Length: 386
Ligand code: GLY
Image (tube, rainbow, N blue to C red):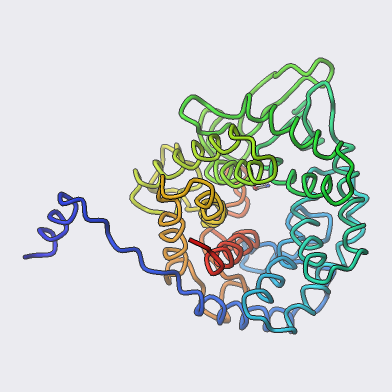
């Protein structure tokens, strides 16, 4: 039987294609080589790798950047995945330099910066100093909550009045942890209020997401649903959809409210229906970009989705195949198309992510948060209990 005939036979017989397992060993080997070279070349732990500039040079940022916590987080995952103490020492170094951000009230990104690092430091060492940093950061994040809107403000720049972006959900995990760690239920109330406002307005009937919800801070009314990093107001930015899968899943984990689980599943189903349409587990940067397939991919969206799907699959049992779908994403990210060779890619792991296409910024480049959620997903995959 020829290949095409065999394929048609398998499809018509309902035989599922076998998904290969992600090559975790290969990724760890690469990560160890890349990070060893990076640390030798850039020893200053108060600078953090973010991406690659248009001229091919590495883009390093300071602690106030929203991406500053991911490299430290990667070092923590490398420690968890290899058990080697040298990565723990480096992780601590790249965690502690972020501490001052705990007072930063000008951003909603404190979870990305501090929870991804200090929570792991606390979990690993049980040092109360790390816990105190997270509680202070949770106070700073809570200061951005407006009870009229019922949500935390994302950005302070114009033309937005009171923007609440889908990414902002990710920072709620720190508040939900802080409520448990401190006994202060106001952190929980703020997180749940924010999630409920998000749930009310974020999704279209097909469960695709709007990127930005802009509110009137005086009366809490929704003014506009729009995009910032996606193709258009009415389109679905792939990473935004992945943030929604991931965040509604942990919202269910922390609250056990079934409406969050239903929303996580619906967001996941939309994401997967779109990658099915494109017949590639790695999405284009926006699902509705009319220039598809001549559009950059976003490996970061794939990695966030894979990590979220792995957790989501633990709450829905065998009802869905989210585990298989996460495995397929991770396997695709482990191919030469996406996984860099040692000594290349400015020491990042994954290629082909997209940051901000409308600003022509970080288009088809490595992004540090793609590597973070990739390592996290591999860690979740390695410790998965069926
Ligand atoms: N949180 C910013 C982004 O996802 O690009």
